[in-house]
Amino acid sequence: MQLKRLAQFTVRKLIRLVLLLIAVSLFSFVLVSLSPVDPINAYVGAEMLQIGPEQRQLIAERWGLDQPMITRFWLWLQQLGSGNLGTSMIFNQPVGTVIANRFQVSLQMLAIAWLLSGLLGLGLGVLAGAYEGRWIDRTIRFYAYILASSPTFWMALLLLIIFSVMLKLTPICCAAPPGVLTTDVTLGQRIHHLILPAVTLSIIGVASIALHTRQKLIEVLNSDYVLFARAQGETLWGIIRHHGLRNILLPAITLQFASLSELFGGAVLAEQVFAYPGLGEATVQAALRSDVPLLVGIVFFSALFVYIGNTIADLTYQIIDPRIRIGGL
Image (cartoon, rainbow, N blue to C red):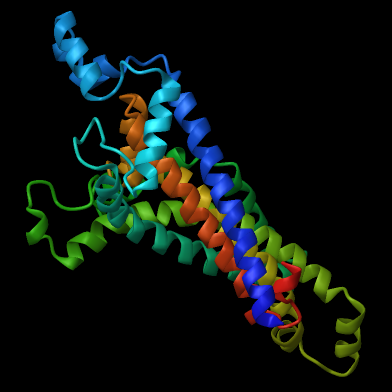
């Protein structure tokens, strides 16, 4: 019976995933194709705008820009069916290769930021909820409200000015020292360049998890069964450990996996500020230069990544709370 529910759950998830990817790809393709940016001018660059009509025609034929939008989307779907996301106009490489290379750079930053924001958000939320109304609760809430209303690029610029310009503790830009070959970059140098972008993303992500965790823990501490536990002499942290964590972990995990999409959006801005050559920086280039295959491929990959993360969250619920069954998801 459990295997049958698991199979039904998997089939439902796959159907939703396919529909989501088709819708995301279609809307992205249409929006980018209707962009006012001339893809041929963006392709040749500002210094070579005085090209002849014959050359423009050759470029349009090379990248299929002379075809109607519907035809180009249909051809892209046919390529996708064979596992090919097309060729990037900017990098002149397969889109899959560009995404793989750029995501490998961004993944380290995203993973560190994701873990830090989750752990710090959960810890701060527990502290604020446990000491409701005291100075530590007011301090954490003030911190969370400030960060929740702070744009990512502003926080990145602020940290860059403080730690890179004034204190000179971190590099100003890039994922490695400029002028050093990739093969010669040491692990310490990579970490040194990674710290500030990762901390920027994690600081922004802490706020929502901390506030939701605080509110949920307060509800638990004011419940009848916690009042009974207090009457039996249970300490505050004993109540949190035995009764609170299981109730606050589920919403915290939901928010943590839902923040994957916010991390992608924040990475675009953070990588621009720090000149970090990751997937976010490639997204900006693809949008500014109207590289339709690359931009649609990145959106396609991002939607797939976030959906898989949310599915993992659904499956994780059963480990934390065995009362939840797949049939109820």
